[in-house]
Image 1 (cartoon, one colour):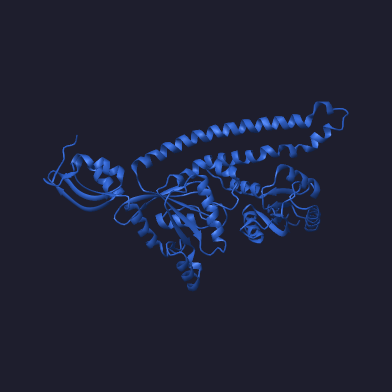
Image 2 (cartoon, one colour):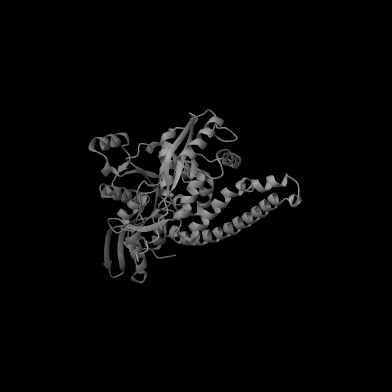
Length: 439
């Protein structure tokens, strides 16, 4: 008797068609934007098999595309047996509903925002991250409920048995009420988690430890850079939005000073406002930094537009006034001429390869000098009974001179303002070379 064949568990990726409109107003070309949309689709597990573009001065208010193009889209989807149609914009609820009717309900029609929300849902791992994504998804879904129940609402107008109950509107209102309630519960839970996060952050802020945040376009190599700087083992993958949850690690600089380096979610063009709002507590790691390392993919032809997208998100979280160092990453993939041209064009930026470690020493030196720029030089005699302050001088500052004498530790160091205030009672009287009496 022949052996039975094993059942395949392979699920083929959904075939998708990408749709974009060129209005002539965008700084980035429609093809370049669709290239990024294709990468987003790949990240979500779909297979882009075709593209459709149209030149329009103004998108059609009913179907986004012109009527002729909608018909062309239907024919293309039918001929390729596509599963999903993805628009490179955020469709209005009515546009999405009208397109589903015109193209056919057998196809899933989604927009860029829904795609990004789906990717965030796939990659959220922590409890807080999952709550943030779910709240953003519900806020996106809420105004689109009417279209989802349009078939029931339509039945109501036909009259006859059952029509008087208004089942479409009733179900719509039930769902809306459930979503409003769920959003309220999630918002309260996020507020509780934010309070916990604020308490944890407060201890770091009060210690005045120098804090550096990595910000940049998604897939610019921020997590790889964090790993290279701190020896961390943060998850790294060549895909968009591989990292959602904030990660902070300690970096020990030459001389012993310790600073905190944090990585968080990457940015992207047209990042949904609901996501920015939901992730504000997470992004506060960036907003409360002393310094932002703006990481850029040196090999990306659209790096200028990506930098602008990063700046817009930093503005949205009120982080635009924080000092910035621009770091061009992946320089190992450039040839010598390309690298020299980039260095000539951006003389104040730093150029590194987080993958190979090239240029990292220069970056660490810049971090050391930037952290020290806010320091105060103190000369103190710390009693043996307060050795903790000696340790603080080593980990939070830079020791210039240290000597152990009968009356305590004689230290001259450069330390941050908060630590300088704690050391003030032990400062040395220059005329007598003895410690002042604490008040």
